[in-house]
Structure formats: C-alpha cells, structure tokens
Image (tube, rainbow, N blue to C red; front, side, top):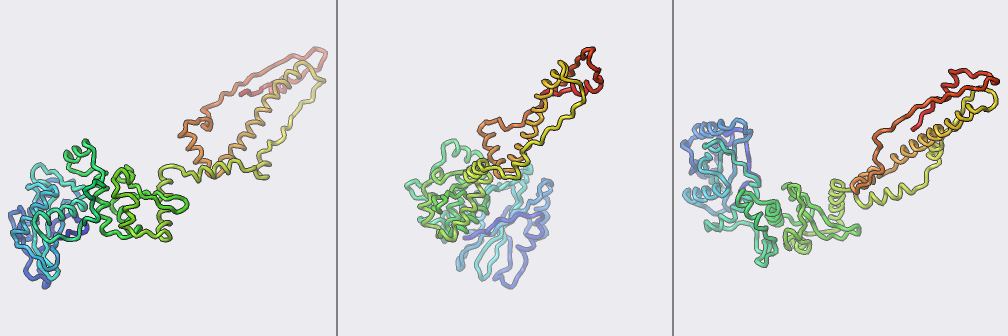
Length: 413
C-alpha cells in the first residue's frame, strides 16, 4: 500500500471534499463515504461539519488534513476492511476520536484507494494536531499495518537495507527513550536513522541522496580529504550534528558505498562544495589561516611604503634673539609632542594598510576566539594641555606674549 508522497494541508474543506466525491467515468463505482466519525455523508453536510470544527480555532491557517492510501494494482479490500485499516492508521498517526474525519473510497483501473479527509482541530477544547515528521512516520506505519492486517507487502525496508539483529544501529540512551515515549515524537537521532533508512531505498547515487536529505531538512557534512579521498558523512539536523559512528555502523561510508553508486569524478565537486559551505558557516578553514600568514609576511609594495613614510615636519619659528632659557625650555617641551604626532601618523597608515590585507578579518576573529585582545581598539585617550611661560631678561627685547602663548601650548598624550 502506498500513501501520498506528501500529506497535504489546506485552508478550507470545500475543495477537497468536492474533489473526493466528484463523479467520473474512470471510476468503476461512484465515490462514496465508507467510514469515519461524521454524521453526514453528502458533500454539503461534510463541509458544514468540518467548517464548524475549524471555527473553534480561527487562528489556524490550515485546518485541513488530507492523505490517500492506495492498494497495489489487482488487490482489493472490502469496505469493512478499509475502515478497519484506516481507523488503525489514523490512531497510530496521533489523531483522537474527536478529530472529525471521513474515508471516501475510489475504485478505478489503477486500483482501489481511499481518501482520508480530517480536521486538525479537536472538537474537545480545540486542541490542534501538529503532526511533526508526519510523512516519514506515515510511510513507516503503512509498512507496519500491511504486516498487521496481512496485506501485500509493498516496497519497503528490505533485510538488505534495514538494521540487522547484530545491532548495527545505535540504540538510544534510556533518558532519550523515555523522552520519546513522553512526547510521542522521535528524537533527532531517531529521526536521522529512520530517514536515512528510507532514503537509501530510493536514492541510488550521491547526488540523489544529498538532494533527498536536504528535502528533509538534513544537512550532509562530507568528510573528504584534499586528495579526493571520501571517508564518510556526518549528518546535521535540528542544529545537532551526528557522526556516522554515533548513528551506527549501518551509516558508515563502507556500508553506504554498498547502497550508493559513488563516482569520484562526478561526485567529488559536489562533496567539496558541501564541505566548503559547511566550513564557511561554522569556522574559518585552515586554507584561510595559511593565506593570512602569507599575506602578513609579504613585503610592503613601494606605493604603500611611500604612503607610510611620514611627511616632513616644518617648524614655524618666530624671529627672536639668541637662545634664552625660555627658548630652551620651549624646544625641550615641543620635541616630544612632534614625535608623538609623527608616530600617530605612521601608526594610522600602518593600520590602514593592515586592514587592506586579505583574510585579516578571519585572523582577527581567530585571535578573538583564542582570547587575544591586543588587536582590540582602545577605549579612549586623554589629552593634557599645559601652558608654560617665561619672562626674558630685561636686557633682551620683549617677545610678544601672544606669540609666546601660542608656542607654549603643547598637547601631551
């Protein structure tokens, strides 16, 4: 038996109910409601009942739930058998008896199948059916129900694809098993194991396997060396990455190669791209670090060296008599200030050049992660202004006080 590839959800019930009960020449018998828990059987009555249940939760955008179950060509069941199978299926999927649902039977040349239409809103309290991972769970339940109801077994996990009794699949710790039972949802590890088992049935090569994983929100993380040697996958789901060894021997590269057709020339570009993408999202690669080291040790270009050379300092001297004690004091005070200005200019140019080096940002991030703080920007600087004054001897001509004040205001850092 097969279900729809993807269970559908919708905004209103009219469309799906009218579709399921629509008459057609391809039907051997007219579509008819064979089961469920609803009072009416006509399209009008069913739509009214479903709409009433949806009105209990006006905040829910898609209250409609729709799936179909189809028998293999040539097989058939009675209406009673269909109802028994569908009830068992819906209960295992997590629906309560107070979730409205109906089963509409179709019989055509392709085989018998039923449409299951249900409301996600519970009549008691308006509780909403969430149905996390429902497509994967539905596939697994159908295979289990085929066995329990003694039906023809359709394509499913065969012995060559399923975990062997030798425990090639890692068991969950006790606390995670209890969590699954308590919440009724598989843990990320169980979800990965179940999903990969299912995907390996249909995926015959690496590209299809990777695409199928992404379709289930799983990120494959290839472990491939720079020489092109493939060593296996890790799998990331719900923000958690699992190595193959954490999931079980079934998921090791040696076993995956038996199920996936691996061609290095075709697949390695895809695997390298996946690896580069994963490394770019998580941390800086070793290649970037080496490139940063090389860039820092390169000699400065001539143009940069010329920019880093501080400009000459031109002094504006005021004509004054021969050196006096005041003039000597002024010169001694001014020299450190000009040296500081020159040093600041030089360091500014150096920092501008450093910021232009490729991969420097990556290096800075690494140093910050390592706790290195010498590249952090200083919070503030304090500037002290001090004015010195001196009186010349009477025998010397007076120097303008305004000029003297201007010459003696020297900033210190």
